[in-house]
Length: 143
Image (cartoon, rainbow, N blue to C red; front, side, top):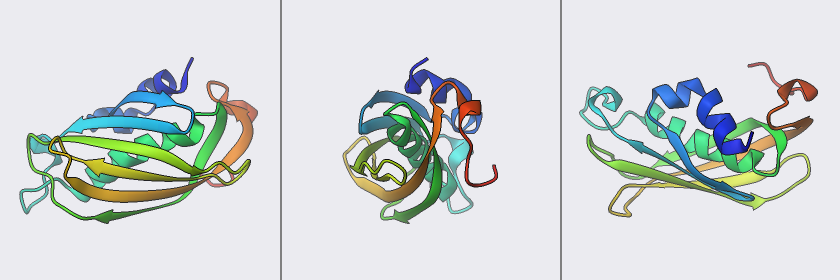
């Protein structure tokens, strides 16, 4: 099972939010989501948690793209522009630093007009397990 199938079928929270991986290759991942009425906050724009979920799916894919089971340690996001209902959000993740244990990646989320919506960074921990065989490794954190 490749990482795209592993996460698209295994990450039920992201799937329920409408986020889906479109492309994964070593050091790169792209995920997409269309903003629906269910994503809107009380102000009528896309809730930050929905955008975070999309970026988190992309960063999970890029962190695991080398086949080694990897778990997030720390993520941060900056919201630069609002997204509205009907927007197609595209999250592109790039592995900035391929460390053997603590990789670092950056994600840009843009809308269908290429407008930058958010910038997301992530640090992760690579286990001894492999993608598709999660019991072979262990996470340094609960959850």
